[in-house]
Image 1 (cartoon, rainbow, N blue to C red):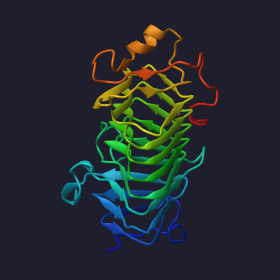
Image 2: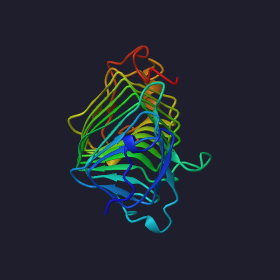
Image 3: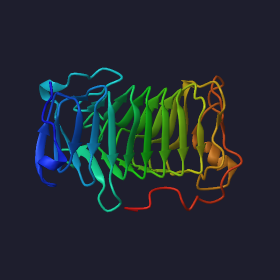
Length: 278
């Protein structure tokens, strides 16, 4: 069933709509879009979210159709097709909970499943469990702000570009296993964990990021026996002992690999982070 398809040509920029259930076809969102429960974008469909749109998640109530891992409690947008959410520096797209004072984890996330070429740019994500969660997908995330989420970006077995984002004040900044990520030129700061790598990372590139002032900058999970290369990043210092103190790796548990961080940047890449809303 198609529930409340929103067309940019059929509604004013600041109009409000309420969305629930299943979506299919070519869909355009603008204005304020209120999400009730788990909304599923069908395979082969495309959702385009226009600059300035607010996507507001409400309590799921009786519509929390998918709540067990790899899904989350609360309302979420489940993407089996493709989502294009590309805002503008002066007109970002916002994903948030209806109560802007509510804590992280108040809504589920944007859950992308076996999807190709979804993209997010000039977006803001707040208060989610896992704001963007990619499963077996190809996703681009650029020039976006993630704050006050339990996990900002979470993925497995995905080709994912994470570049020029500000990821701050989340429980975890980036959490992943397997996957083929390129993670470059991000500011990752003030999180509980900057990176949480849970299982056998492979085919990854993590460099030219500023990773600092997290409670732990990098945490390796119990299924990471291999060393993890994180060269050419800036850690807020050049003191090797101080940098290592920000890792949970083989220095604490012998079955874990170690984070390899040298050569390192001696100062932040001036092009890292977002170029707006600083």
